[in-house]
Length: 421
Image (cartoon, rainbow, N blue to C red; front, side, top):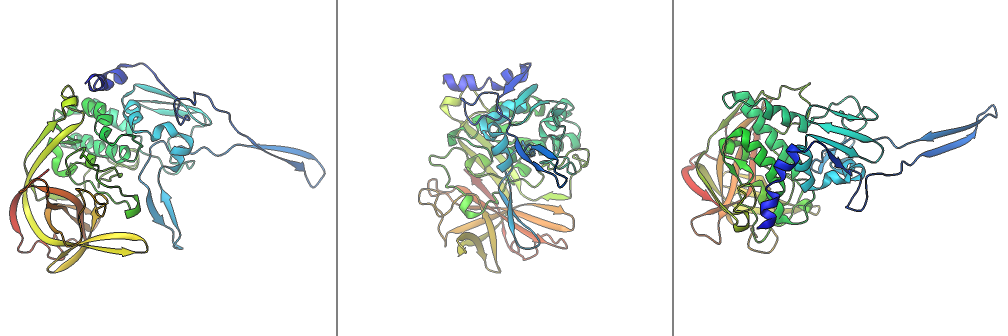
């Protein structure tokens, strides 16, 4: 209880502090602030016989926000990873989940990194070499300064302005995309380690905070997706640390559709692509953990989400190819791949075997360019609580041009009300 009471003060402590000093290059509590800058020397003689000595330093990589380990392909078929390697190499402190909200909440952070000192505040970020506002060492791609965008959004927040409301909600989802990639020793800290940031945002949004999601944007916040390949997924924690409809219920990094990737200088962050929500949230209730009774932004004991929408019934199928596992839902007229939320094959109470009856709740349509994405929650009946359901994944059906249901999954589907734990 003492720990819960003290951890609930994080937002106040870091928001009101004048300066936070961060040993950003230190991988643990023993590394200290300072590091030796290694130089590389090349010496010899020119063709004219003149002696020379050249000194080099490794190019600074300025990735300070970790992203999920997404594999991409070149034109030649080679694969490479977009992920947190530069951060873990140059700024290991920033790979720690508890540090993320400390950095986001602080008025000013002075970072002691591998090769230089840099200062990050709520209006700007500067480093010694001048390149930190760009991805890596390239100056061709301005990166999203999420800390600054976050501070700007809350400072200017007006609950009556639709664009500002969307901007704040989108920034929260961007924060979650980064936060879920970070290292956490105890899975039960998944919600407490970002509780200070949630408390800070709640003071502006005036909306109920529901296990990592927000009541006023539940239709959007429910559409988190685990796109990691099967070998990167983890079992669902047991005992459960969050309701299955929350991103906090899994230990793999999650993605949202509208994650901010580039700075506001190049993108109108308030503009939203065409969309339509089909499902209706009827109710959502949270029961807090006893140790978190003093902090509504901490850990939860349970949660119940009730939604109404078209529900298509299918059967779970499984396929293995090249060492990777893929899951599908087999409908009467289609067999469609899903993104499982966790390692469905892992033995335990959350194991979901092929042949299990699953239920796809039609949630939303999001248009990107000329492509429609029809998004549905994939549920199964709860083995523990009869009459209730658990989320196990997300089904996304893409079509171009954009029909609402290109393969007819929801033709003849029933309009049902389901409750998800």
